[in-house]
Length: 203
Ligand SMILES: CCCCC/C=C\C/C=C\C/C=C\C/C=C\CCCC(=O)SCCNC(=O)CCNC(=O)[C@H](O)C(C)(C)COP(=O)(O)OP(=O)(O)OC[C@H]1O[C@@H](n2cnc3c(N)ncnc32)[C@H](O)[C@@H]1OP(=O)(O)O
Image (cartoon, rainbow, N blue to C red; front, side):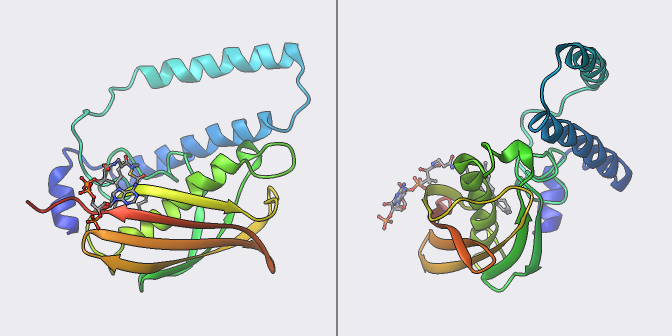
């Protein structure tokens, strides 16, 4: 599988390039996290904007990736990098997985928040990624796309606190993979998710 993915990718990034990319994204998201909590001061923020525009100019000097890369988003060889590496979803620590069930921890930093709690859309984004990992994991095998994702918000999710997540396969029916998940803060249920992932037709 991995060989096939690597073959689809024109130029997979080296470990050094990937680390540099990750560090640059980390710096950018730290800025967004800080902007989410500060009291705005126009002078300071104007200086920040000028400095950030210089960073943007440096990034514009780099070529962009070709549009036709088709390697899955989470594949190690994908030069587009996976969603967590791009800062799209919060980093997710996986404690156990790969047996059709996944157990892990996630912490939503301030940029994912409303006032004191996590934005509902950010929770949905997280569930799409976490349930998607199980839907696309070694037990189910192969690529499948999200057909629907339903979230039940049970209680407010605090920011900057470790939350615990469990994701499992509810049922597999032909190309259809029904996946469920839950997110808890200690003993308190924060949100539940259920979704359907559909694998492409083989012919
Ligand atoms: C961006 C792509 C990313 C893909 C990643 C893949 C692999 C990555 C590898 C490792 C990944 C690790 C982690 C992955 C993490 C996250 C993954 C996120 C994935 C996404 O974020 S991806 C973007 C959002 N996603 C879309 O952009 C989908 C747009 N959409 C479509 O592409 C089609 O819509 C599709 C393919 C869903 C179905 O199309 P189709 O033609 O193959 O299926 P068809 O109509 O034949 O239905 C077959 C059976 O599913 C039932 N069915 C279908 N849809 C249903 C629904 N909504 N509700 C209830 N039942 C439904 C029918 O009722 C029938 O059931 P039955 O057979 O029993 O009659």
